[in-house]
Amino acid sequence: MASIKQKNTTPELTVFRALRKKKIYFNKHNRNVTGTPDVSVPKKKIAVFIDGDFWHGYRFGQWRSRLNSDFWVSKIERNMARDKRTFRKLRRSGWKVLRVWEHQLIKQPETTLEKITTFLRQ
Image 1 (tube, rainbow, N blue to C red):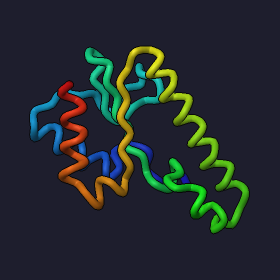
Image 2: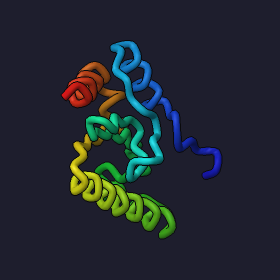
Image 3: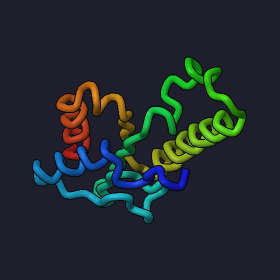
Image 4: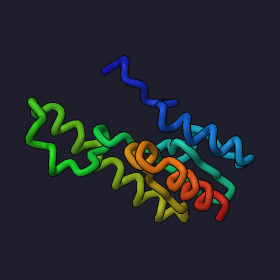
């Protein structure tokens, strides 16, 4: 698990490049913001999280039974609970939060990147 990247994953790099190309200024992995969002604009209180389908439990109920150990079930459930807490904390603090899934960037890159761009330009 130590060799799995937490920052600057392929989906994140795709988003970073697209935003720079459109001259949108943002912070990467800002530790001063709750949950360390992948993309943030603190002045506007905007945060974007780019979540991997496996690690953050996209449609977890459908494939949960295929995991071969309780460790992984527990790990992903903790990640999902943490994501919900983070979302609530940010919203209560007045932040606008967008969550983008890895599969969205793979299947519909243009649409997803446009969604992120529009969200950041609010």
